[in-house]
Length: 170
Image 1: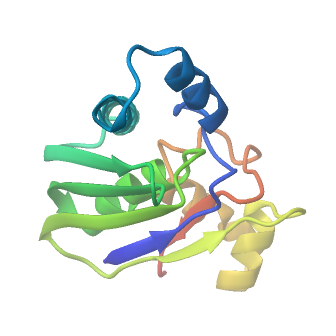
Image 2: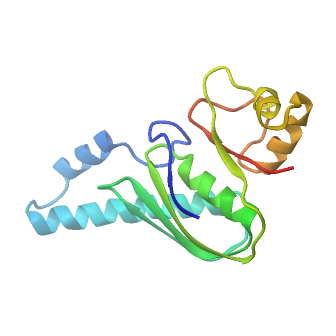
């Protein structure tokens, strides 16, 4: 699929903030370029592990999952093999809908490809029925969008501005 952009300030708060990382860096051990590089790599490793845990918590079966997070670009690069395109899109959205992630570089291989869904960024005032009306012409088709975004969505009424959703083709 490629490179996706997300709203960096919206989403699940599973990664540390820049302020907390800067505080940790100033109170951490020795200074110098090597020490700062080691601290940066440790932070990126911690963030990568948190993103892998977030994907695993959603119960999506992806083989050889590896996520590399780059603090300089706020980009998460995802590697692995997965069965369906819809599951691949869900993994991209889980990672991208995390506060602090601005870009997702999708490098996931799909064994049984299917048509890709449209991605939609929620704006203030949106509801799943309003989104369904705009995309399908029928507000009562909101369960299609809700089901396409499970397990990330647990309630059709709990969406927020900046969140990116899958809108599958009918």
